[in-house]
Image: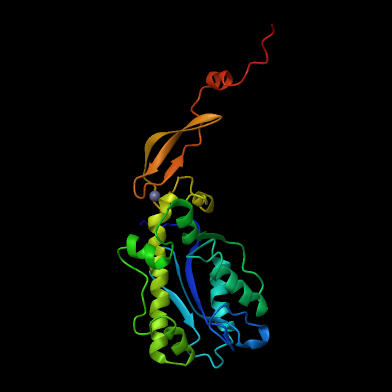
Length: 267
Ligand SMILES: [Zn+2]
């Protein structure tokens, strides 16, 4: 993957939240009333990296005096979102983004400036019929460097329970787990790049050279694209295989005119 000199600022991120703790009378089909809630959910940790950079940034509530007060953590991720042109998440359109927005408004933050959102779970359901669209399954099948971890030392919900209880080993595991999630997500996205073409990355660069979403500038001519008005040269990225369409309509003026019924002729 080539590193871009300019272009959009792309943030890959993932958050972990604390569960809602409530009084329940049964474990089956519960309707939990608001007055049964002991403590509400909040952000426990986040990990993020700028796409293509090595550093993984991370913040958590392990040293917070009051674990429910996540304002400092929110400020950290808010700044990054505010800076980002595009964000990449797994299921972040329905989870991470909305969860953060809820915490932002509850803590008096303004909305971060506009960013576009690429959600790998949505790419998966749009283009593929995988057995599962979960990060664990997709990174296991598609990634070679990073796969989602299973936090074996604290299986399942144990990890969250132990972090809330202040267990340092659990927090260390949470940090590793959250950071690897972001690394695995970034790798997964690089596999999906040629399938995802909803954002024109070239708009974010002053360069007049066409740059592929993967950062490559090497293309080869490959076939033509036809629509109702024309014929266009197709180009394929030599690195990732993404296809782009040339801007010039290759049909001659005469040919284009022949496609329309001639209204100038008089009978
Ligand atoms: Zn490419």
